[in-house]
Length: 317
Image (cartoon, rainbow, N blue to C red; front, side, top):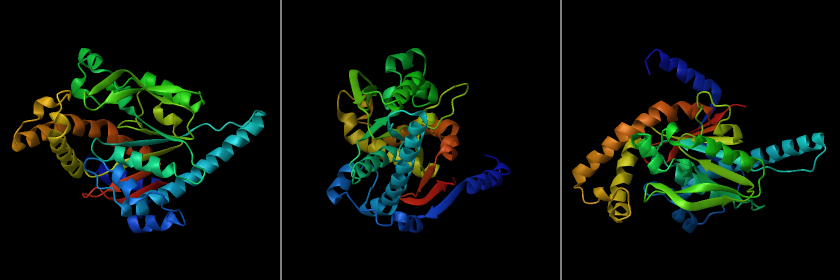
């Protein structure tokens, strides 16, 4: 970004969003109850993310209240349209898209949000699906020379992803999504995650807000609400390296791990490998494809260097 473009871009972001500090946002919780125990929160933590009780109270509970209001409004509009059409009332799943960089904490955020939404008083059925399952299998990526661009838009079976979202939104009784293994770094043959008419679907992935060139339908066309989890590049890079080093001591030790070859690297070499992978693949993807979609989100959560949300941007209606 050049210096001349920066003020104009900042002004457009300011115009599009209302920005809240953490304390101000926390005050919007109103009377939304805390439905997760300390043990629940402990079980939702990621490898390096420090999800705390304070984070749940200050950030997730106000968001839960906001989403409760949005879901109620969407259902009301759906009933209005069904009445107009003279057809029986049908409530399609409310779909929430979650985007952001590798290692920024999307998965932990999605799991925590699922747990909180599922504990609303009417106990809705909340499903979570990640876009990893829609990556092409390793065999296909290798054939197309895309292994070094895994996670970039062209590495996903977008047609299958759109068909999945379309079927879920249409209320199909059972819709299957492929399953991805982070251990083998590949799609699991014959394994599927079957979604059966959830009240809410959380759809999480790197590029879910991507506006693919020439596409007639986008994944985001099916979203009722969207969240972008954000942080400074330097912080995300640190988190990526920390995660790599932790995985080296754990998952990489398993013979079935795709990254088993890194299990015995000395610390300095492991850091160098992690930094190279971040710089050559993940940082490029963030700058070229992921970050440009941030302003398409309804809500942006800005994290500080300690993985805690410091600022919230809510798009103006």
